[in-house]
Image (cartoon, rainbow, N blue to C red):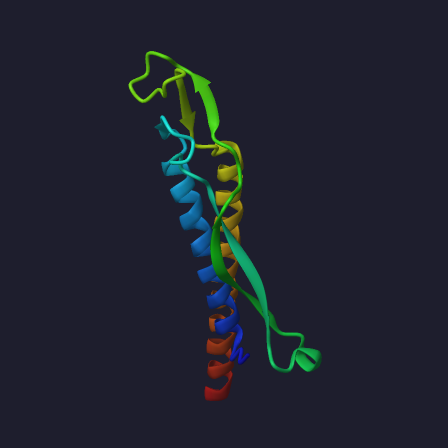
Length: 138
């Protein structure tokens, strides 16, 4: 794997966190969804990350991360007895998406912070490069 620069490392990490933020957004958007069939209930999503090492990892220790897949979490839908609900099944139950809103909010804050950290890495690298160019002008 060819990791070219600090920009490549940070860019890949930012792309992975963007996938994570999108799955959180999808989960939160569907948190209150209700159906009459447990098989059609929204299933929460989580990205699968994979560490990508440079070809010379033993020499330079460079690695980054990629989001390689988005999978459904194997949680059972939340079953509630609501016989008057228009979507209730023949036994009077409705099924809600098993999304833990608190967990999703924590995941969103963590992904957002990691994305911001990588933006800072890119900005710092850019500033250092600009200062290096300024030194060569003098």
